[in-house]
Length: 423
Ligand code: AAL
Image 1 (cartoon, helix red, strand yellow):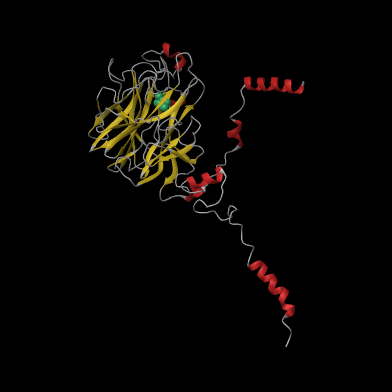
Image 2: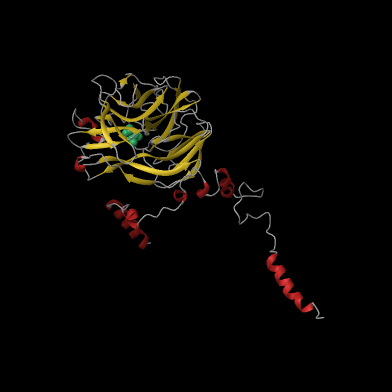
């Protein structure tokens, strides 16, 4: 019989590869933990486990956003006289989606908020001056049929005689309510100053009856929302109407460019208000237009454009104390998500997968206007489209080079470079 001894080194070799040295349990593991590991963690590693999932790809509140041009809207060959913007969330009634939006159809393009004093009954200051609220319907969310005006400008001096804009819709106890900004002066006269009011109807096609008054008081002078309340967006929660809104603040008569933006929450028992402002307002510290939807037991929001926390999705189980849930790219400006459970008082919100948004500043200088678009995403509880969970967005170089330096920036850089070379 052969001695087994020559086999021993081979046996040890197999053992060496089959049983790797066990990992140090105090070192962060190679396999992503499902929960926070009980080891010392850096702040960033610790924060990973504050999210709904540590990987963005698994996070139900992370998504890419895809955009599609809408069919069915005419923009006067882009001459700047027709603009559509700030859509409402689509609602589905009897097999059709309905949207409401700001429409401007003026003899000339806007002259700009800085020239508000020159605005006339026919010449708009801003893109949302001299506007009406129009509506359109669709059966697929891509091709829309413009149906006509929903809320016209009332006669002077009624609230909103100068412009009505930026609507959103509520369905409550079988009736329909449109909340919107009501201007009694050209936007830009003192600022973008306006209150929120509401019109109601028995049907999504109207006719709409304005209540003719402000639904939520401005803040006292010196309070953040003292002059304007914008972008009202209603949801139903805890048997009441929750109205999220935006105010830009820190804008003083002498310092107009130091503004900050927050969103507040007002709560009412009846759609006509009065909406009582939440004592913790503002409830978010960033963002611009309001984009809110029920998610699980709470409320999620997409914050874009302004503030340290722009380009994030945030979540609050109580609808008030929002925390960052994900960081996103190319979010939908003025996004208005299709959110079938927005008015069902759910504590099991399913999230959103599409909606409308807008692009401003379209067209030639001096002829700028806005267009509405469709966005698609996967911010659903169930995860409908894994392809939208890729965290990388590949943009062509042109997109970056379009963010080119201005002539004055080039001049400043040249001066700084001269100084650097002569040191
Ligand atoms: C929008 C909104 C409000 C502002 C203006 C028109 O995107 O924030 O509606 O007043 O811009």
